[in-house]
Image (cartoon, rainbow, N blue to C red; front, side, top):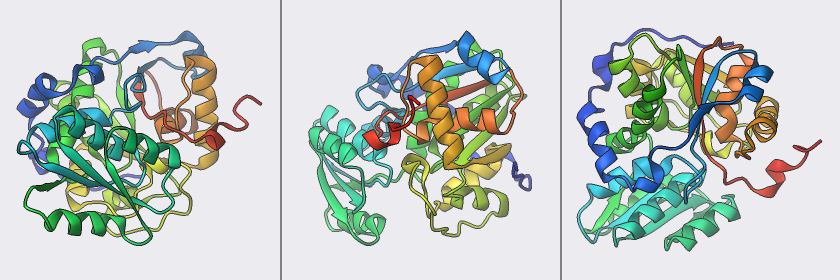
Length: 322
């Protein structure tokens, strides 16, 4: 069932600056900007409503993460070593790419169970990758504190990362014609960045976060206001599997997100199949969460969503052709 929260007011997200979102377009590598967005008749027929879909997989990272990481990296001192923790793997790739793009170095800390596909891509972009059996986020923070030229980037916490993602909202509104935007809900950077821009320029549009039922930490915190850790019961949708939300992300989502819905692994797998059949796109599980929410929760149209993340391991695609 959809979850609802107590109103908090837009001032709680004032640290996401509209001018920064506009300026981010001048800083972000153009390869990540102006991704395709369109209506697809076959998709709309299957979902039974009008859907504007934006595809954020056709870039060197196969996800939207290059926008936020690129904007954040541009604010780091020249020659800095960028450090991050990356559970799902896409953010680590983005930091590695941004560092290489700006002549910096990158060090990424990942859980011991991290996808070999994603860690291999991080290393391909030049990052040093450390697998950690315990708290990989704490390991990244400790490493960053131990060197004067190290800059810790935290997805979900840092305003610049959400502001970079907010450029997606500006692009969606160029087409417009929707009453709601449904976005994957992971660490909150995508949904809050887009919401900040959309709420300022089209305040009647509803913002809906689509989280994984197996990893409801941010969804619960959005409802209660308390950023408590919740152990995931599955990591199938690794890109939106967050066990411990940042307080900054909780504050922003409560201010900007109108509704949160959760989708289980089966619904996500079905949405991956739907994207493959109607869009010719093979998203990773997290990347299909928006489509899954539209289908599972009967979100009325016209609606917009973003398909983002195409770094799935092969086992995620097994059975999709059946």
